[in-house]
Image 1: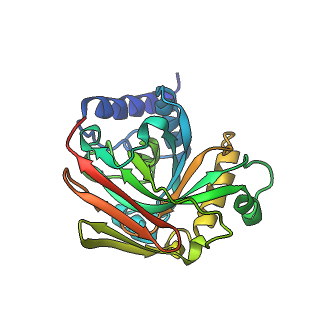
Image 2: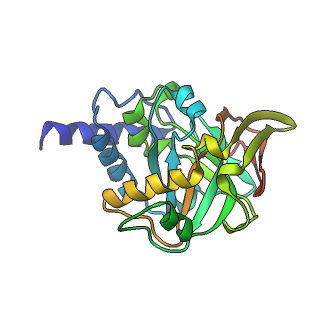
Length: 257
């Protein structure tokens, strides 16, 4: 076994133990410094999961979030069926949860081969408002790009709104977002904050997933990235996001497993 393989396995074990015990671990950047190796850690960790894959998430698309975490490029993670919640979110399953508002896209066909904005737009069956509950197995969110990539792009849970709109009915880049904790506005943003356009983020992911040999598939849901800053959450809090032209989505955080 090479030194890189040993380092990847050690990073896998460190993150897996944090998830199992509920105790955040130290960063894994002392073990891996290459983003490709970090995605290998992610792949090995995700291979241990038994729930079906439901889609992907794009992370670190918003300049505000990049500034919050001290990173300068997007990444992606994998969504699983046991990550979707409706109405309530169990904080007992999470370590250090934060929430951000996004546009989610449901795909009607695979995305492989030559890809451009027209191709990804045509592949979107509909869009829905979404809340992503991000989480980190790394103590204090002390992360670099390799740490978050290895940790499945800091994935936690996600919730989808009930409104479903085709792209013929609204333009993602033109949306504005307000996110509320109770009655207080805690985050604001726009479609343009997500890599300039949520569809541009989707194109980035489609090309990246294709190049990794695991293209996006019909029926998958894609969380396209934050429209504004993420905020921490705690039990008892209700968070609602209002995305203009698309609708609302809300989650109440409960203190249970």
